[in-house]
Image 1 (cartoon, helix red, strand yellow):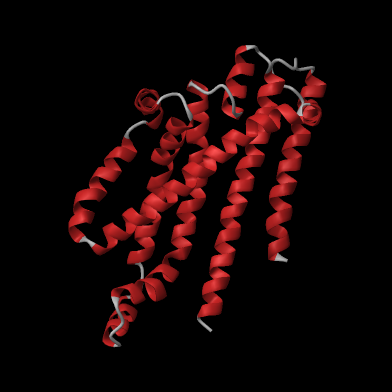
Image 2 (tube, rainbow, N blue to C red; image 1 turned 45 degrees about the vertical axis):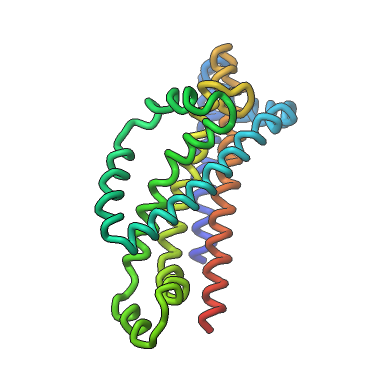
Length: 252
């Protein structure tokens, strides 16, 4: 029952919002250039799905690449911070400092450094997305019961065995929590990059159509972007489920 409610409640709320949106546009006679109706947006998506798909593919692939690289970098940095006090004292304050910098202010610099290709967008996506993974993974690795670690060492387990059998499995919920945040930030990073330089992608389509006051196209691109984001988020959630099932099986 709880699982069904977790699906019905958000879907029901979303439907209410869409119905209210449709009623507001229809009854208020709102011009499409200001706010198109949900029906017209869905119709456009079905009619021009090929164009939208063409722009969605590079955005999704670059977001996925940025997210995966951010996850790898974040986990590696978290391991270094966890196992080295010197690294923790040297790296952690600087990571926090860089996190406080307004990211969008650095986007043009990434274009200057790496050019107008996908490299700059992926790099900017990594820069935005890796921090939650570092923080969450570090918290997870440090949250392990110290008595369990001492027991493993008393049984002559190596640090690698302790890491793979105790620390990493215990940190998985933290790691995937950070990854769920990172995947949304990775998409934002790519979209910001596409706003500035791209000639393809959903971000480019949004900024191009907005400049032409074609709000319907912008809203359709945003809807497709949300679908792509949900797809990537769902893959992370699926990975979490499979990882938990794997370690649950290993522990039996």
